[in-house]
Image (cartoon, rainbow, N blue to C red; front, side, top):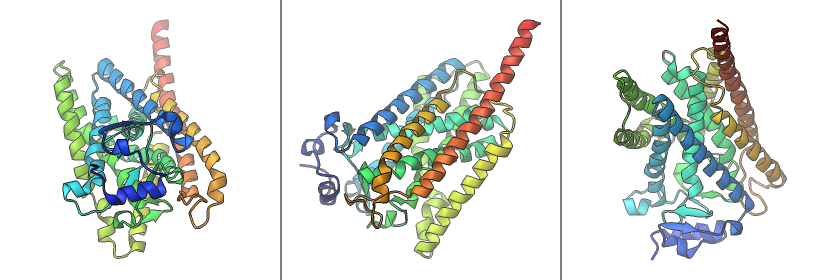
Length: 383
């Protein structure tokens, strides 16, 4: 007796090549990694799970060495956010929500929640959010006056650029399937709903940054002034609080109501594009003009985690996109010969360029500060 809907079973059979019946009745499922429906699934699994592991150890190290719980709080809060935000989309019929079938993930090696959530999706949230935050954190922007708001904007922009490279690739190889008949995802950029671009990849990291800095970091700072550390029970409480507040606040932002506020589909798309354009221009301006000398940065030469992960991420997805291009260019009316929807390549190229620039600029800013610190140390030793 499965708890999924008949619509889910239809989509799984018609568009994803079937479903594992045993997984539908299991809280946790396991598939042979060598028998997945496409080899790209193995690649993204390894990448995201490795990214989540790196994010965890980086966050734990910062907490132990600097007494800063913000990274670790963000790591766990992102997973809380996953379950609070996605579970209602999996089982709206069980929660009394009249939103219909929105999307479904394909089957990967390991998953949970009756075939609904692959393990790599659980890993995806911290794997991309944590290095986005750490990248901006290391520039010192978050420590400046008013930096929490500028920094939050940059974290959202960085996360969105990297995430959309993944978001536009997945549908072509049925990593997941959207129900384009659902009004919630009716406004799209090729195969990617605008709501995914704005309400998922851009604004939640911004809100998460404000919550983490405004709650966890300020609480930790108040404890440090009294030479006290944040306890594990307190860290858990802060994590749960931020993880629950995140979807609530994100859901009441004006961007979440664009489809309802806009008078037409064209107006909604224009509004989404305008939000993205303003965020892009502002964030790039911050990276160019505000971060102009590496002042106040807290990075160290050995703390290369966000740069190293994101460079690996870009390398992997560059290879995946090169592989996908022949089928992409052969697509007709936005569909491949396998009837899978393709993403919007011009936007993906822009994201690659923006990601490259952000990594270059961040590396220059943190590198400049590291050199300055090295000179100070050298002078001190010479004296």
